[in-house]
Length: 489
View 1 (tube, rainbow, N blue to C red):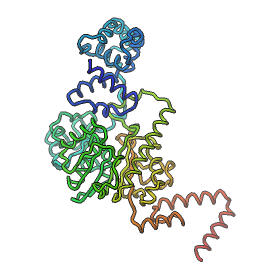
View 2: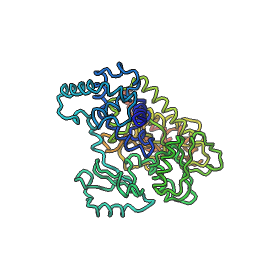
View 3: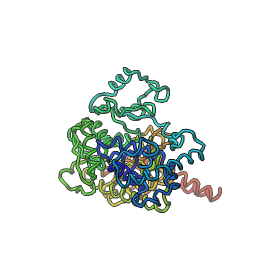
View 4: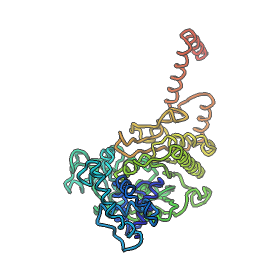
């Protein structure tokens, strides 16, 4: 029966929005994960139906021993849709079995009411967006090359025709050099390449943070991944560093830390030191971290951008708008705290801040607040120009949500509906040198210069022209003559 209690606890976490389906399942021990995952996923698929059956049969009202709705859901799922409840006789199992006839009768009534012949027709429909997202496979260059990986897949009968051209079609990604695209339902979890750590299953957008941070592959490189579990981004950083230098990977949760260490070992990450601690408790003055130059921040977020092959099952869940706003505010405060802490490290030059959220409150708003903090102003931090943050990627930030509309060009967004990825946001803070800082300060005092990017000048010019047009043609002409005379003088 412990198996059912564990599955019910996972459903409780999902109800409380404490993670994605995949993330919550990852917290289960390896020996029980496959079985528990199957029950949780299948229960979610039929959750609406099972809830209606339980309510119609008055199960929770008549059986006081069953105090958890989610426990009832997993038990009734196995009773009606599987091979029966797989547990020894006990009071809770007997409580369910006493209502077996009534539960089954309500289930059959519901099928007739909904006009379906097959039980499978009652399952929640898959998110259509997930069907447009390829199966992304990152080649682990710590073990072999992408060219060798391509040859291996070609030898298996795959064709370089694209992931949607055929069941065996695949392609190289045009933005991330070591990323391959396969048809959405291609399975690799039991593939020898996956179990050997030669390939890593990672969404394209999730590859952006490490690629944009681009830590140097040098023996004296020192990098921090502040929230490392489950380890995909950490292993990507390690591969980009070519296993050179030092990479500190922080994870405060003990279970997730265990997952992280296993992932890093599997991915052959030799330059990583995993640390079971909260990044916020680490002193930037600690001699151990005085040479850290690059920090990756991918803190807890709402996960609102995740559109994978499982989280569509949560879409039916509703939450009070005020509660949701309060939760987002708390997340944003924590995210800002992480950025401010990262900016305190004395040698840091680049900080990537990313989320898998689509909400501006966790993205543009956090970034614009970070730029105003004491740490940013005293440390000389600013957003990296577009040329340093995936310049070829078209989707940028929301300009009206930034302090300066031009800053939107310095951040990256991913749209689940249009970019064939999960929803994502990435920004890069860089520390300017002293001469650049002086120019930046002068720019704020006297107006836009090249250090603020040409986009800023363009935006301000448009705003000025709009203002002049609203003043009328005579006044506009007078202002322009006055400006022209001033420029000549």
